[in-house]
Amino acid sequence: MILLHDIKTAIEKVLPEATVYVADPNNDGEHFEAIVISPTFEGQMLVRQHQVVMNALKEKFATTVHALALKTFTPEKWDLEKDKYKGVI
Image (cartoon, rainbow, N blue to C red; front, top):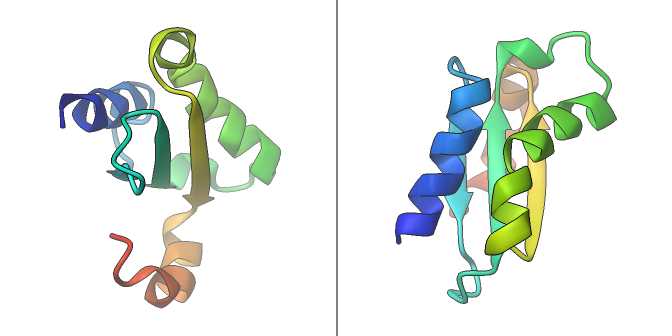
């Protein structure tokens, strides 16, 4: 779906070193899930990590995206938690 690609691209534009996974679990084109893994998040509080991602998606929320379930990780934290997300990514 093009919107999944658009969301992924918008996040990668502000976090070019990030690994980004985006899904549309309801297949409705409005409710999405994203996992973003980035070294940029090192030392940042969770709220700041989410702000960085959500700011990248402002335009999408104004037009097409209704909701986004967001998980952000540093690479180190992702290595510890990734097994919980098998089947999601």
